[in-house]
Image: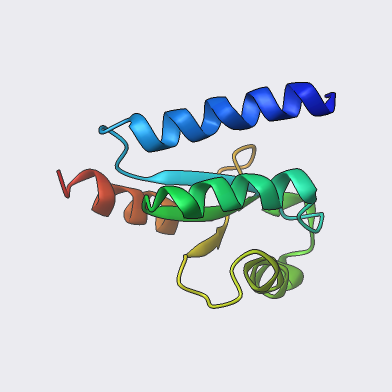
Length: 113
């Protein structure tokens, strides 16, 4: 994506996040196998600036060893949200593992309104 396209996409995202009244929760997906890239950090900043409730899902958790999921999720949290005020959870959409805690948390936000 060119720099000009990135700027246009950024403006669209900002407008959407700041103008939609119906957003109960932003679910920010990151790939658990990789450190957050510049685009991940940029998106995270858009979300934080919006002031909307957010959770971070470390997707593709089935692609790494089960013994490394917890540690890797914590490391992602530290890289994106070092103060730890945003919940970061592992998730696997393919194998449907780690889903119970995620859905439980999402339901809390949905039931607020």
